[in-house]
Length: 364
Image (cartoon, rainbow, N blue to C red; front, side):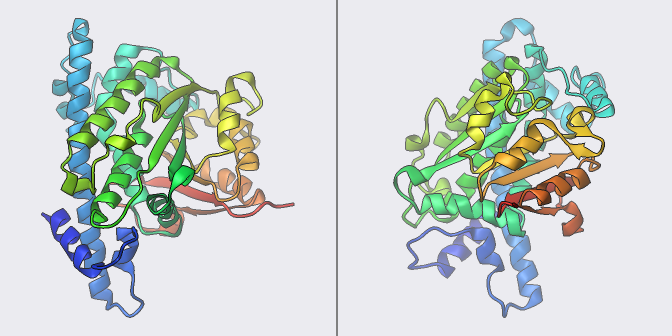
């Protein structure tokens, strides 16, 4: 298995080191590396973290399916049976597909007020949506490297500095939380011989629909149960001290409105002290409202203005026509960016359209 092979190679290379490190950056380190060797290392680490991700996400998926079938037996839905046809791209007659297609076409938010439909969506889209974000975070680029560096810093820190805060805009079932956990556990697994602190990775999902709350609660439990079930050798120690009932929570928001709107009060407060802000497949669905005369408006613009220095924003979507306006507004307010246009080559099985941003200064 590529994961175990790379893990052994890294252990040999870092023997005697006590602090945690980013395994992706390590595999690219060395200015005098032969280009072919660098390429082999890049492929090895990529295969390794993707193998770990598939292992982790399959366990979370099984845990979630089992929970839904036990708690919602009255619906007579075989969640396990509907997952594989979806992965084979036989997506006809999926209850949420028409809703999403209309949302993308009209540039308006999709209706996720049906809890039964939401459970099906949560299971069917778990692997793809978490994979997009996970593979983007693990990519070797200037801003993704900084995202992982923040996690490594927390693993090497003590006290309150161990907290890692994520705001997930329109995060629905909690996919962003699952993706970041997979990243954190992989980094821990590659550092299992080193001294590590327990990172408290907390994700606050801000969404338009309160119907996601029971599902988010089950996703949180599925992640915790899966993490606890992994062998100590896989993740670098017991994660029981990481577990808490408030690691993943739901809060209401409406990004079509300004950040000062009453419904956005909690979001406004959260932005003041957050490490990462994620917009996964949100901006395009709200384009008809957040774009006015080719300018970013509403809460999105306010977030660009209000965020503290160092904040990182991760945006993925099915289309890219919002990106030029987003980049223009971000640059005006002191953000630097890296997108699929700068990368030029698509991330294999990752998001085709993305923008990564970090606020580095405040323009006067």
